[in-house]
Amino acid sequence: QALSFHSKNANIARTCNYIFLKSSIVEKSVHIPRLGQHISTDSFAMSSLTSPSGKDCPFHQFLAISFFIVPPLLLPPLRKLLNTPPPCPSPNLDHNSPVSSTVSSVLAAVSSCSKALRSTTLAGAKAGSTNTSGDDQLSVDLLTDALSFASLRSCDDVKFCISEETPTYVSANKGGTVAVSFDPLDGSSIMGPNFAVGGIYALWPVGSGEDDLQGRRGDEALASVVAVYGSRTTAFVSVKGRGCSELTLTDGGWTVTRSKVEISSAAKIFAPGNLRATKGHPGYKRAVDMWIAEGYTLRYTGGMVPDVCHILSKGGGVFSNVATEGAKQKLRFLYEVAAIALMVEEAGGLYLDESGGRVLERTVEDVDMRVGG
Image (cartoon, rainbow, N blue to C red; front, side, top):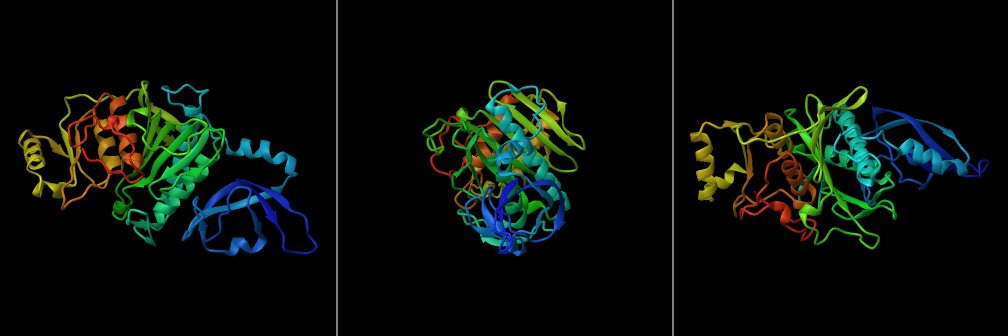
């Protein structure tokens, strides 16, 4: 990251420009300024995080930094050099495209989130705030949200972003042609027992005059990245019309572990989400009874990402999430469902909504639109 830094010392009247060179995770509270923001030297003593929307929120993990002073004219090329992540090795990408550079920035965010989550002691700790949907936010939700926005906004090809934790469109780069909607940490509520959790990112095409995703059909999505934070960190990279591949994060970066992920009809695994809905939904109750009677193996953790990705890893199965009046739907189309559905379809499967229609034919009605299936 690059900042402009003001000294309050009268003997140092000029503004110095600093570049962050290296980092390590520490248990500390700091204030994270936006790129290019002018801050006072004692701002680093503040114990708050400035979120992309400008709202301060609690934060307990950040990067210890070392820096040096550089002339202001060198900032743009240095900033671009330092912020450019290594290219994504996924074989289903055109490596000279805006989609490829955006996916690389998403993977950089996933790498940062993976390192932060493995070092945090805050699993299950409430942040003391709620998102606009009324859900309690955990400290790890805000942590991964901030890390994701920081990586995506540094990508020249990203025009704007929106997340489940920050459900407003946040500008990135005016010349960008890609928008990203994401859930930075799916399953944060099951981190307490150390279950696998995930991150979900959908990439959308945007034109010069567009600043939101209202009215977009799900099948307009260009690509998706679905990350799994478990005993290892993996990412399923799906590109429209070009299939799905699996990458694994190693000490040397991202490595392709499966160049082509495919779903077959042979595997008998089922993951019944929102199982309480069987009480008021006879059709859902019959489906669950059928899977049990036919000898399907139950594999369900309560996290959409690990449950769906387990099915992809095994080569097939069924994931369901049906809602009733007494067990309302929680899955949001813009941040979760569209990206997961694209991944499933590119692997050869199908994601249907509760009416039996293809979910990617649905359109974005609002930022909180929820869909079952």
